[in-house]
Image (cartoon, rainbow, N blue to C red; front, side, top):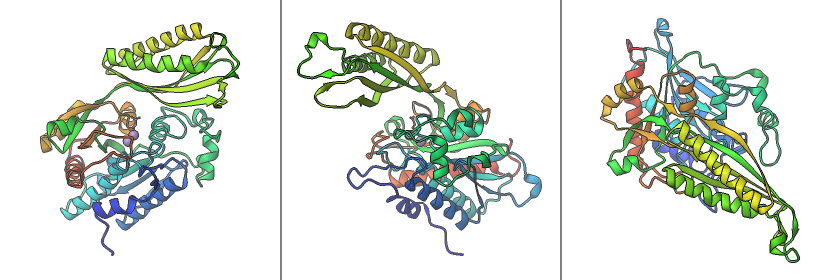
Length: 408
Ligand code: GLV
Ligand code: MN
Ligand code: MN
């Protein structure tokens, strides 16, 4: 059998897929050609390791390394992450967890490890919600946090329904979704998206919690009118209401020590010489507690409403994707932290791990140092040596969880 590619070779193979020649960032949106190439890549990598990949009706994938003792068909340990990216994203967010999972299996085999329970690698679709607006859509669907009937009607920026995008990509949603019945524990390795590990001077850490976060669509409606002939005092300009709201959100978050971002807007009719009729802007808000998040979003909404009253515009706010706070299994984190003296740190980024944890599956996350903390950007980075430390750490974690006789 041909040797399986090592981590560095896998990383080189992945590098060109979905990469923009102009920015160097990645466009790996779900149910597009780039993502489909990544899905095939994953299936080939599993096949090269003698692992059979199951794919569900929307493109979630899983491959299990079965224990040789059939009596060991007890709840398994799943690792993995996602392969999709945000628009113009980095190389590491998602794929690092998948390539590291494959490399960790190789490491375990090279160590002569025999799993005492099934050990799986999973890939969840549309983790970023970059196309259909719902974060962690694949894992939400498999855990039942979102139903297919709710999701199928979602539309992307071009108005394509989710159900059509999935079908056009060659999947059959009626074939059903991945079952998590075999999953006793989930572990996701991820590039760190902040500066905690680099500031501590360590390559690897574990997650304690995910901040609650969400996305709210703000529709600011006004009146389209001529940019030259309409006196300033006669305008009903929704761009002004939006602009003030963006400033208010920033101030609110700073005052409360939380996070608020308007990173996406759509303007109608989007003409230079017309006052716009509609500005739609998406607020991404995150806070250290559920109550803090609700308070901040309410305050932003209140200020936007007040300003709309003064501008003669109107505002509608719609919650599109909200995730409550996630506290990862503290006992599991403490048990695993002892394997490497790894710090246990919170994160403000969302992950499929949070969704599986919410579904009652004991879950842990392994973070790999990011030297700048920059993420969701072409500049996202992790040094190869740290990625290799991550692979070793993940192998140690999987060995601890899947060794014969390990507590469930
Ligand atoms: C996902 O990476 C998110 O936190 O938005
Ligand atoms: Mn991610
Ligand atoms: Mn991300």
